[in-house]
Length: 438
Image (cartoon, rainbow, N blue to C red; front, side):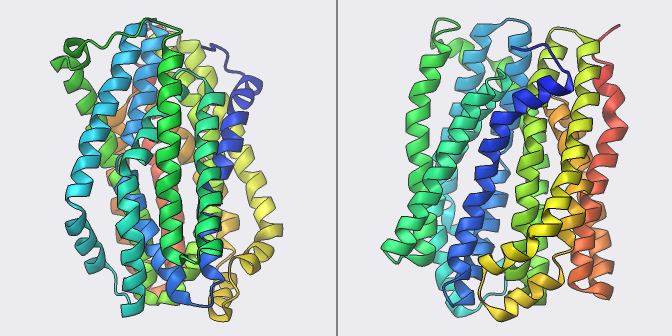
């Protein structure tokens, strides 16, 4: 566990996360590219909307990673190694329960999803193909959240990056095989995710228990694992992050819904551009992830100077990187769009709104870094409240901006949403410093 927080230290810690995170959006990019070049817009629209549905569904349980990071880092800072084991097992128990409920309730989730979007009959068929297989990846995908959260909390970023990288690369390879070799189109993309998630989970669960056995004796004491006060604490932390994650995922689903209300071509074009935004988000999240562990450690070890240093230096890195990303996108966006789809109408719309991918990465860099700081500190109530306010602002401004500016108003609303997230969290920063006495 590192107690260093200079710009060089944070950057070094972030490098493995950075490369692993780069692979994650490439899964969506490959899926979009595969569907966008099949000469049928319904493939792309169905995959875009179905993927958005699962983003909000699985993204709602992002607390399984975020909550794990903060608690593990603080337990490590106070050298409570037995509790690290128990925290991990409690969250795995949550995964089993959640996955079971999602599978049992899949028909209701499917019907609710269809009621939200206005899809053509052909698009509905492809949407169902994707949904039917992807729902069964819930155990694998949610378990990966917990495992990566554990290793990020321990500042073993190389291990967490290896897990994410393995899953993403396996996902890409399998999707390519199922779509191009077996001609399974939308079904192949969903099947690739399912197989990749289960394969990754099986391999790295074994590795996790092996790694944990090196820091403390593995004892599975059900009374300690399911200690009522501990379970209540983890439930409270996770509930707040659940609400926050649900609202964040809703914001992107709402973006897709509003694009769909304009036209199916618009939602397809916006999906291509969102790949830029997600790519930048995962790059910037490398700093947030590495910061989480150091922030949690600083609070667990009562080191206020360490906390101040990591906050300052992580923001310098994040904002500088956000600016560099904007410059890169300025020169590369047109080539990327041409590669993503050969459908003329969708290309034209995508080019028309591509300037937003130059603006948003820098504007969003602040809120991503704040997220990492508050997750590491386990200040989940503040994360929840800030997100509630930000989403409310987003919904209100989108109502007026879309009515007057159309798709431009939609993109402007998303940009303002990122800015609102940063401002609302900034207001709560004194509470984090207040947890450590001088």
